[in-house]
Length: 267
Image (cartoon, rainbow, N blue to C red):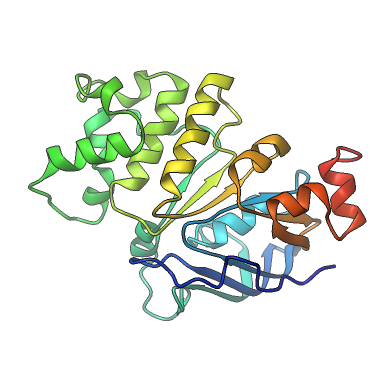
């Protein structure tokens, strides 16, 4: 198995606001079943990293460890370390709710809060943090523009979020994560339930968002990984097989197992 080394383009200083995640020696379990084995990975600001691999290889678990959602499932545990801008996210006294504000997450299926309007969905993060904002209109417009939704929804802010189309709902969930100005956005199969047109809009949005965010996307879609990511990490049975620049992973990987997977010989 290949251990990742410092990759070209990843030595640059973090932009204002940070967003660098470093995973070292990460092992994770569900009960007695170990799902991650000694993962070492860096995720850099203003880069998109795709995590690929067959079902059950630990991709989503790895994603969930980075904002401490993994620990919300009873019977789970992990060892190793994860840092955000050099700070251990599991250090005593670390507020998991605050961490999830810095490290937002978008799930496989759109999940707008069903009893909330578009407006209240966007502002939900502030309410969760018991933070009142006087500039709500500015936040709504800025955030919905960031999610490429303002022109579509500016006259529908009081409409239930759950009444939108599937693609709009997913972008609304992205807007909800962006409203609190995270450093990192984790995306777990964000397009798997969407049609090609909506998928294209999400991918275009990823290109815009990476100008200011660290983005980590789990995807089964090899074409999508090749289109949107700067770096790709390939996992197999909970182990990191190979990581590198996406172009290299898809054209001249070092490991035969990687080549077999990205060319569709298995998986």
